[in-house]
Length: 104
Length: 97
Length: 114
Image (tube, rainbow over all chains, first blue to last red; front, side):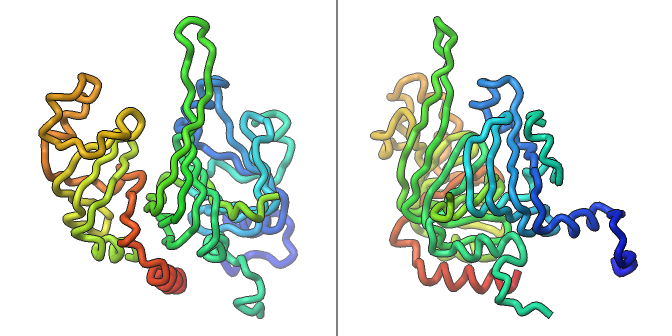
């Protein structure tokens, strides 16, 4: 898209949004709950979230993140210096950190 | 113009490229985790790992108390091809803080 | 193409294919295609959870093993089998079939091309 206005602060398309969030803290929620048999049984519902600095992403929504924290049902379970997340697992990418406390 | 080499990670797969011949951590679907040396990969995240340790987490429910018993099963495999569609996350473990 | 080529070179060697339904089948790699569909010959089932010692059970011996094993009858009833690539979780590779330098080179080439 070459027609993006210069200096525009409002993102207009999903692609523009994705371009604008590089290097920002993000929250990535995965949709792969169905395959987490163990934790799903434990908690009833299941929610897997990664929070960290978005290094970059590609057209498949593969994501490279830094200083990544893994939250399972709102609880911190793991930390990774660098992390690659395979795009097919991504439910959403958010720039808000508020969803973490709520367990999304 | 940014030079090609200066920013090491320009796209997510660069993170995997830089991990070639390094021990990595792989989180898979169905409660599986692998640690092994990355010998090959492609754009689907199909991989060949060496000196692999697999950890499988299972939960059993006690028939009488209905208590949930979480168990982890470990095994090692010398060389393993991993189909990419099961991959959730890949991380170089040594850089894990 | 990297893994298609790799598995083509592996034809004739014995591998263990682990499926997403936890079934593990050991056999001689007969052929492979671009989807990584796999054809195995001289197959036998390996149940690593319960029968780590039964790795050598022949497919024709299944009547002699206990009932929990008979559930694997479908997998055992054929000496050769075709496995759809998408149901594969792992393939355990024979160490002599892994040339690490070759894999590194092929991977770097693939990364540049892709």
